[in-house]
Image (cartoon, rainbow, N blue to C red; front, side):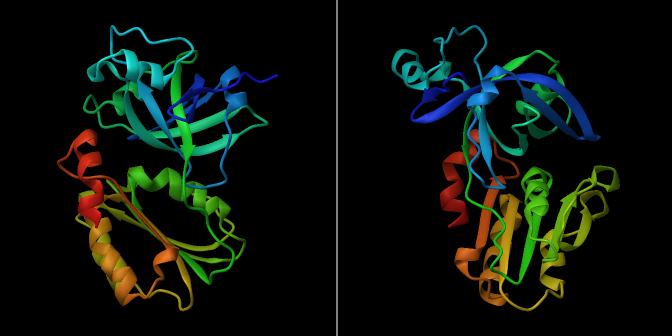
Length: 268
């Protein structure tokens, strides 16, 4: 019988154990986890399914089993675990594996250096999953626009696109070494753009000749380009609002905490 997941503010908490880590590209680390706790993980069917990784504050003792409601009631705010949101790259119940991809840029940031230091047997907690998007079958074609932070969700979505469905993808990474092999049964045209070469993601989408018909679009990543593309896709391309998934995962020049506070106002 599977262990019941812990709860935190109504959201399940899953304890995961690292099975292995893989260097997908020079700056992308895949953490594959499993363990007994994974049996309680409940997938939600979304391809942008995400979890919040909990980072305990050093030196703080938390209740066992972990419960965020108790943490918030009994500990000062500065002792609450820090949280970072990451897409589930894949969940394989049969193999007992859940994979999360982390962008790693050296010693800066919280999650990247943490992921780089993980070893098999290490344990960590995640909240969730949440999510809102999955490719639909009742549209004429699919559009994906994103940077490194959106690649896990776009990769999972490409795998779920209906066979033969037209797909256009515009993906911005640092350079050619950061390109990934992406599988899909769709009729996909994937264009990689390189930040190091000065490629402009917004300009590439604006200039593109896109297929006719009803489009479902997934546009996620740095908030600046997401905000720029929003009116173009809605007004100039005529994509229905209900078929347009937009999210600024991060904003240049902002910490994760600061960005969460201003996100709704920035994107309108």
